[in-house]
Each structure stands twice: as C-alpha cells, then as structure tokens.
Length: 435
Image 1 (tube, rainbow, N blue to C red):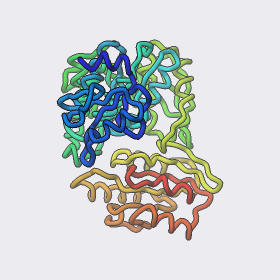
Image 2: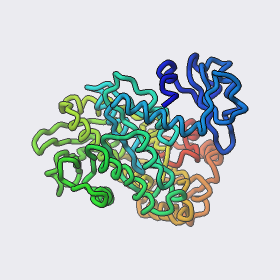
Image 3: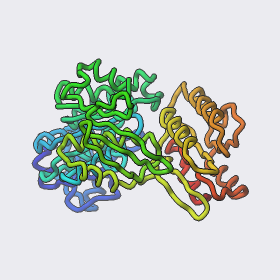
Image 4: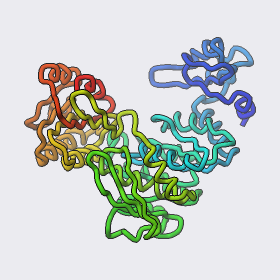
C-alpha cells in the first residue's frame, strides 16, 4: 500500500478544502455536483502536506499523489490500516436504533477499554474509512456503525472494516427507494451476518426478532450456539443468557436486566421509549461478552445521555418535548406513536413529519401511519410534509415546517407532552423554538 508510509507520517485525513489541518492529507473526492480535484491546490496552500488526486492535470508537483480513483484509495488505505493494527471491531447495522445502540455499546465498553466509535452519521462508504483511519495502537475495541441505502452497501463496508463481531439491531421498512422491498432490506443487512459467519467470531442477536433469527439461520448460524449471543425481552425467552424486563417508561426507560438467569441488576436510563429496551440489552450483551462486571455495565448505561434529537427529552418553559426528529421510517414511526400513546402523562400532542425515501410505497405507508393515529385517540396531531398532506386524514396538516411555525405562533401549545418525529429532511428541529 504505497500511501501507507505517507499516512503514518501524516495521520490526519481531510476531505473538506475549507478545513485543512497542518500536515494532513487531502483526499479529492468526487460527488454528483462537485469535483474536489479542483480544490487540491487550495488544500495544500491552506496547510495540507499532500493531496490525493485522480486527474493528471491537478498533480502539479510531488505534493500531489496521482491515483486511479481517490475514493477507492481512501477505502483501501483504511482497510490496510485496520489490518495492521488488529483492533477488535464490532460492526453494527440495522434499520432503527443503530446509532443509539452504537453509543450505548461504546459508553459501556469505555468503562473498561479504550474505545473508538463512529461519530455522528459517518457510517457510509466514506464515513467508515474516515473512522477506521482514526484508529490508534492504544485503541482496544472499535464500534463501527454501517449504514446502507442500496444492496451491497453492507458487504462493501464489511470488506473495508473487517468486523470480528456483528450486530443487526432490527430490520424495517426504510430506504425502500434504494432497496426495492422489505426483502431487499433484509438481504442487505444480512450481508453483515454473512461476513461474520465466513470471517468473524460471533454475532449478537435479539432472539425476539423473527426476521433476525431467520436471516442468521439462513447464512449458517445456529441460534443458541456459542457463536450466537442471544438477548431477549420476551418472558417466553427468559432462559436467554441476557434477559430484560421493562419496569417503567414514563417518560424514561427503567429496566431490570438478568445475566445467566440469576445475576440481576436494575438500570435507570435517560432514554425515552420502550423501543429502546432492546438497544439497552444489546449493550448489556456486548459488555458482558467483553468481560465487564454488571456494575460497570450499569454505570455505562446510566451515564449515556442521548443527543442530536434522538429519543431526547427537552423541557421548555411551556412544554415537555420528546424529540426524535433525526430520522423516521414506517417501523420507527409506529413504535414511537404506540409508545407515546401508552405513556402515563396528560395532554399529549404529536408533531409528525414525512418519512422520506420510501419510493412507490410512500403514499401507502403514510396512510398506514394515519390509521394508527386514528386508532390511538390522542389530544392533538399535527402532520408536516407533502406526503401527509396528500393522505386521507382529519388532522391539521402543513406543507412544510415553516407553515407549522406560523400556525403555532397563532395557536400556541402550553402544558403538553409533545412527540416530535420525522425524517431529517423535514427539519422538524426548527419547530422547537415555537414550543
């Protein structure tokens, strides 16, 4: 790997010519609407030691490294670096909950180990290499989040990250535009199981999820064997090595967790929503596997404080907001609505935004959400986005978030619990100042 000696001397990678740390390496990536080869000289002038380019006219002296394909070289460099260090890698994917689960796992493991984990949403074909290139010899474990929009995405990320262990949080109807169908989602996520079965050590699996069990079995795993670490919330599966019970969820999730049938401990999280219970159990299972004591697992779970509008409680002068506005799909939307409907609080309002990237299924899935709302008699429902606007419903609907803000200025809400959930592109976070 001809770039590797240079990387060892200059171990900071830069892909934004506006932010060029001194001595870093600039990778001139291309996108649909940009070609960073054109900014390679600017990156050098701002402090980068080298710039990797794939168009000869931009390689004007020895500071410019000409390659066939910049993106592929970034990925190859990351894969090579990961293999040189040999850090234990946990790969994590799933339709819902993967970011929260990743952060819970990292917070738990950090009680005992030096951890590297994916920051923000750097979970794609660019983000995973950038994360791996931050690995240092002192890192003992890395938790690498893997996102996917199309078939083959997880397979590619596994070839780059070479995970030793894997976990799929769940599978649901998301990015149907790219996957084509729910079966396409399952096949893509199962690429992690396939890689671990051939190259890795073990997977962690929610035994309650029949789709995950089917996917794991199909690639060759035997459920209940040593290389499959199970966890469960189902009383019928109480003999699982990791078992959990929800004690309370009004609004924060409190649980009792059991390891190996008899070793019990209670956890008081700062997470909103019973659907987070399986994410907590995943972190318990992985923490136990890596040798943490139950007090260390408990400490890590209780320390975690959700950020970035993910299952986050925000208290204003007028209302209490359950903010889950980072992403939405039919599976997560249904779970959020049902959990909110069951919360033992008064004066509940829902503000829901469109679920994006559902392709031909979009109208049907938005109408399904409307039907769920109608079945759970809630005090007030406000729907935002073109898809909800086109659905058949009796609720207040708004073309965009700006229309909603005007409405809330004229019709203020006070003294309510308010669930705010929608796809990131709807920008529901803008409404927080009006509540």
